[in-house]
Length: 278
Length: 284
Image 1: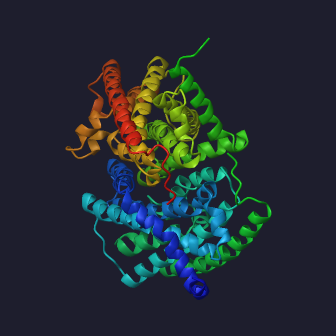
Image 2: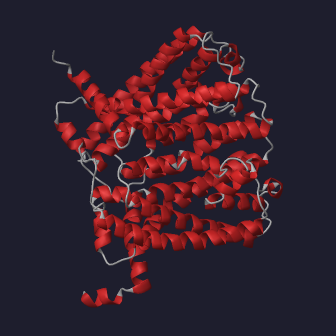
Image 3: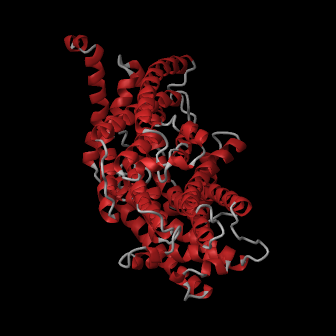
């Protein structure tokens, strides 16, 4: 046993921690599959509602596609928000957080494990919205560059989860307000990041400020790459967006590493890791 | 005087729910947190509408959509308020089993827990409507609004939503924490079938009957009619119905959903007790 503990250091320990935290989520999802109905099928309803709003307004057809793509991406935002960032608050309340801190592992690995563990539901939700939504509403895609599309999606996800880890550090300090903070970051982000409309319609500086959220540029770039009229409605050139997302990845991941370490120390010092203000 | 178990359960739960919802911060911050989310949700629609119509906020479709969306806030708030309490008490505070062994009427307790969300939802509704009137030309004249229609409709609608919330609360008793947002998920699905933000005629013909079977359709129509009268009545879906007829349908459907809500809750409650799920936690 001691040999095994010795072996698990560095990146091996990191990977083992990721798997260990992802494991209960993956297994839990198989034990009770009712989440598929509530988390995968039902969200189609809100996406469809926005599609019908555009239909009622007689909007150009590409807007229907914009809604479907945006609706699919909400899954990732919700995963970051509820299954990663605010999850630390829940872990604190249930007593697991202190155990995470005691164990000789990386907090980033735990957060990554949470995210990856929830990825099954997240990806399924995104895929169902994309596939069923596209089929139901006759959305067609014309990919301008698969390489750029893959790059922008991966960079967007990396930066997004980096941001999630960074914000998770704040949740180490928060108590009951954590729930409300997470709640507050849901619809306003749908609005600011243009989940259901092109961000170009905002004044430049508003759109630029919203671009700090990786999904804003990720969505804008993807729409430009998969819809023929996308570039005309895009906020910036796709290459510029890729460069900015790359920069956001570096900034958020670095900041997450330092902030998590700092906040953990602060939380330990102030005795917040086990507090439960009910 | 000794209160009945029904009243005591409801009132205590209302007080408890309000404390849980509001005492984590000061009243100002609480108010800000309570209204930002619904206002952002309304703003999404306003932006979508503005982009496509190039800012034609004078069109009758806009108040239809705006008011429908505003009152729809109650749907998510009340249904989630009632159903989320199950998870909150069972998995977070771990008090559900103690509540079950106390002399408490559980459905009334859960309905009481939903009241706080109704109150915060009402604040958001009021502020969003005021913003619509002041900045977006929503043609609401308080002196001409039909308040005698508005308040009874609102009351019946909230009871109907609470009963729908009870259905979800029952189901939640037998599910794990994955479905933390079951109330919002159901509200999301009903969004398309309630004519909240577009007339039901926009739906494909085979989906319209679902919309017509939903009490929320009639509830929203009546609320719109009571506030902006003719503007709301101009849309063809329910134009053939008088206010009284619509109210009758709403009342009948509310009674039906109350029956369904109570019996569904009883069924799942029994199932949860039988399977030992009342104190289950799922820390995934």
